[in-house]
Image 1 (cartoon, helix red, strand yellow):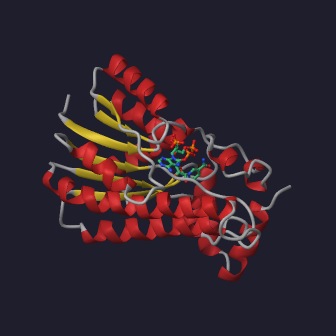
Image 2: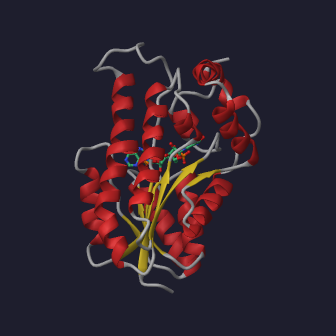
Length: 264
Ligand SMILES: NC(=O)c1ccc[n+]([C@@H]2O[C@H](COP(=O)([O-])OP(=O)(O)OC[C@H]3O[C@@H](n4cnc5c(N)ncnc54)[C@H](OP(=O)(O)O)[C@@H]3O)[C@@H](O)[C@H]2O)c1
């Protein structure tokens, strides 16, 4: 067993929980983070008992300014981290101008910018100097198929994920002569708590095809990061959708995405 650790954000639920199980099953020590301390503690106990790895739970609210920095300080104290999985994320479904600053919608969008963009960037900045010192360093940023299209009906979420794709590709290129790679994972619809918490269970996207399981998405993403792939789109249907966004005239992409995101 290695003495290095994989830090996984958003490990209490969904895709992040599956990343944690996969990493531990492959003999990796894991640091699990999210807000729900109880779920993290239970998962950490389960993983160390089942796989004999070190599993540490560090609760953190990444929507709070300074949340990422506080998490990194606790996670890296006395530990070598050579794999960062920036998975925590959230979205809000609804018209951009339906609510005004101060009510629930903007609050959730602000939290999504803080978690999906600011905290993800801060953790990368803090981690990369350590990853460079490791034998092999890996960053896996969970973006989305949403990162390839503007998202009328979910505008802020799509914009945050476009940022993640762009940032990941650029930093990977900057690090080309090091042993550190950055991978942007781009899942399509996936079974998790995401649609419920984003208030989008009646959106058409949730009814097109069968969502992938969180397990399958996490496995594809984990392997893509180990290989050092730049961008990984999960599942055959999503790869077709990705190609469609490239081939369609750009004027059609936003109107079609609007239909896909609309409530039915
Ligand atoms: N599900 C999909 O269809 C889909 C598709 C493409 C991309 N994605 C992306 O996949 C990633 C994982 O999402 P999921 O589908 O697994 O959703 P999920 O089941 O809702 O899990 C989200 C995770 O993020 C954590 N989180 C949320 N707000 C947080 C905060 N303020 N601070 C710290 N952690 C926070 C949650 O934990 P706590 O509530 O305990 O904090 C949870 O562990 C996200 O980045 C999402 O954008 C999902």
